[in-house]
Amino acid sequence: MPNVTIYIPMEQMPCDQRLAELSSDCTKLCTRVLAAELDNVHVIFVDVRHGRGHPVFAEVQYRLETFRTPEVMNRFMEALEDAIARCTGLTARIRCFGYGASNIHARS
Image (cartoon, rainbow, N blue to C red; front, side):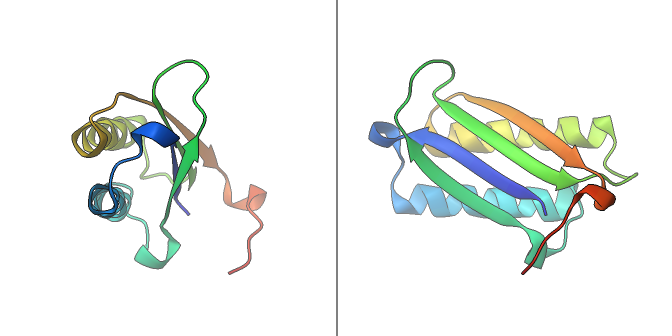
């Protein structure tokens, strides 16, 4: 963890190069700002049929840690918002969900 899932309308999905750039930006943000281990970072792009709301929806799931304060999360979201806008040209709605270690059950 963290898992970053970015939902983008099918007809507005950027080219592979821009997605690779965005994936790299997300990875750097997770490792540098959220202090996540590289092996625990997952970035996924999902093309969707847009119904209503912001053209891009980003969902971030992460493990709660004492060092991931509201200030750190705000810095992370601002930088993620900028990266998404730069790589897609679209405005994103971002939602982050933190989970305590006792509530996470995972396999590799």
